Length: 531
Image 1 (tube, one colour):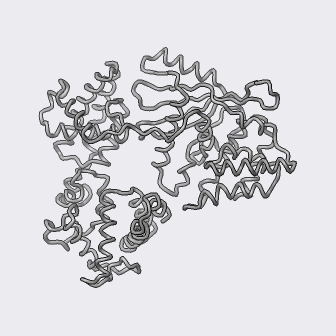
Image 2 (image 1 turned 120 degrees about the vertical axis):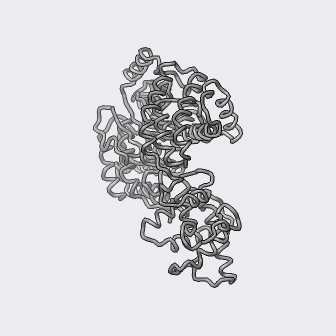
Image 3 (image 1 turned 60 degrees about the horizontal axis):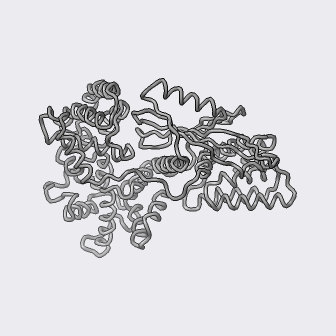
């Protein structure tokens, strides 16, 4: 793999523009990152291994690659190792392309934010250039702009990113659009704020991807518009190493800015204000209105980067057609009422935030436009949309969190069986009921697995009680989704053909080795991702 990457790096030698060289290296990294080994040593094996291989190879292509990695490496250690190795090759007389001297002189110039008053997405525009280190006369070369699209309807992730050298045309286009359309916005942005926005969006993007997807650090298309052919441009396998390097070049320190944290009491206060408003006067059932308003606020706080008051046609449609059906078990009365309550919320929030009336009307049109589709497509979960009895669904999701149903059903499958005649004493949300369910789970007639947490233990034995302790810890974590990587690991193991008993035993062993040993959650997450 490293030999193939160095072979591709020969294309760096005839280039003259440092931006073109950075784009090519970003493409090389992205094309191969999906094949990197998984686990705790991935960065060492892949990143540091590539640097060591290039240093040992010692060719002009290797030197060019190392110089680029000194700025594009993922970790601080990778960048330092690449810089040291590149300097050693220079000392040995290995020739380097002329663009190498310009790489360390990259500087940010100005930043802008382009979007709309609906706030569905922001285009973060950051302008950079290089100082020509060879002439020493302060001439600036390689002026270009990085454009990164932050999609708030998708949870504030980075949806796209590209580079262009047509900076003046881009900025004028954005300014003209803002002048022509009062819903469009284009404002100058402090570089520190741009850095914070991009780091937060990048962190959310990586956390949203499944482990081992090859995309946790290499998913964004980095398209080039600099006049040089861009191999694989726009491919989702393209590394966003270039984007990370530009974010590091922006001034500012510290961790990504976190979204506004809305505590439960703050959410309740917002709902109370809405329910006491004139817009909510015509809502006949106050209990149903309160429940549905809770869901609207939760969606804005948890999915829309802490912005429950933001409204837009796209957000309203995503809430009704995507988030509610996958996250919330609505009663029949709530299913019927939620479009009307959402419409009242749109009118209330839109006027409080100063949104123009035509924008409020457009959002209302979107609500009513998908109402029939929502009514027809929303499954009646409480009535057995998953093939489960109503009382089973109520016990598994007493909090109405529909997304938790699969993992809780995996943790307590006997709740839906005929093995339990009296379900009143087997409530998984209580300590006693949970323990009783798990005790039956160890004697449900399944084939015993080979692990020590299998169901082939004798009733009343110390071994059984020890196995139940760990199994209960696993079941409780699955119930709360803590951490989310636990259920992801279970699904991967099931997809590979493992039986439920074997998966339970594997997860119990992992929890016991990690949590039982007092290791931090980060260690548990890494071990789960490696399963």
